[in-house]
Image 1: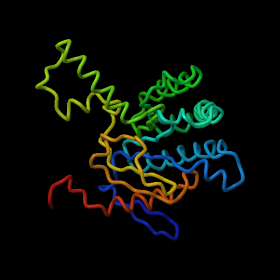
Image 2 (image 1 turned 135 degrees about the horizontal axis):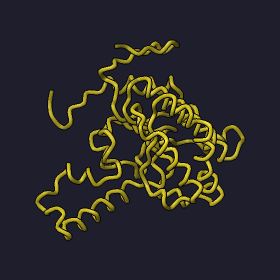
Image 3 (image 1 turned 180 degrees about the vertical axis):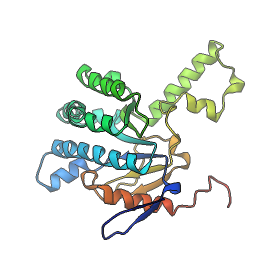
Length: 248
């Protein structure tokens, strides 16, 4: 089956080469807003709309999971006013778009330490997870108050605790077991990481999961990364030769 873009790009995507799990580092909101003479918070606000747009298209394409880097453990270093604004965004986002996710069979999940967020933020995220838990389409996962190094350290501590308590033995520790202790344990393996805004770094995002993921760095700021840009990124992915360290 072919998915076609009806624009000048004329991109065709093959269903059998669609990634199962894509992750976005949604970068460039602040710079996008600044170019328009607006405050950084305006960029964050407009950027949330794109999550809904791309999630609906990813779901249509048959992608199983889409993880978005919504707030990192390091983002607390930003001005308090900006942090407070970002923490208010989930309430507005789900008030507007939860209906779309329910109607399109999209399941909402999260990874990260949402217990560190204000109660009002936690409640709206947990409510959205609960309302969509039986949906079987795209998993839309929000990495919220998330950091990959923290995730790995938490997994190590949990494994050490279970070894000490006799729940597992040291000899049982493997890559597969380690992955079962990660926050992303219930998500499909990560196939593709997309970062917007021209920056080429991983910013402490899903470091273990990206061991053999393909990567795509777009110069487009996140609020402008539309469905057409998604197709360009997926076209690039479908041309990759994924060997996982072996030969073909």
